Length: 211
Image (cartoon, rainbow, N blue to C red):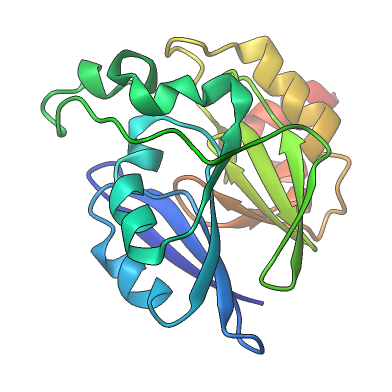
């Protein structure tokens, strides 16, 4: 597995190309604004799917361009299917200085907790991790976790936006993410990657809950 990270758009949203060098296939996780750099790398592979951790505008602002360029189907949690077509839900209408209202077509597929998807020779486990948004999910591929805006290095996703819930987010982290092996590497929606073990020791939001 080869993981390429692209911080895209004004909010430097981490978007990923996860590639299988043996089969020359890949998947994309999140599709932020101004995705040219991501598409340059994705063009080297046969992209089999575009997976969205959630549907805030900074994670789907480049989705239509990426979908048209790759021809790959989009997967999202059913709680946020309508967010793709509604700027009020995906937040873009609230940030006109960043790009104005954004919409895309609906996703071709919906996912739920416990789904096991297979793309590019990888098994992708879907984990519902709501709290930042109602339909937020994390994707586990082997010992690599793509956490969206649920868990960051030294921090967690914000919960003061519409649909956010702090208690729910902490519960998602406690019940779904912390039980993973400590060596599990976390690739978040913003900022550097980390590990579950490191966050147990150093993330103030997590350390507080483990006392």
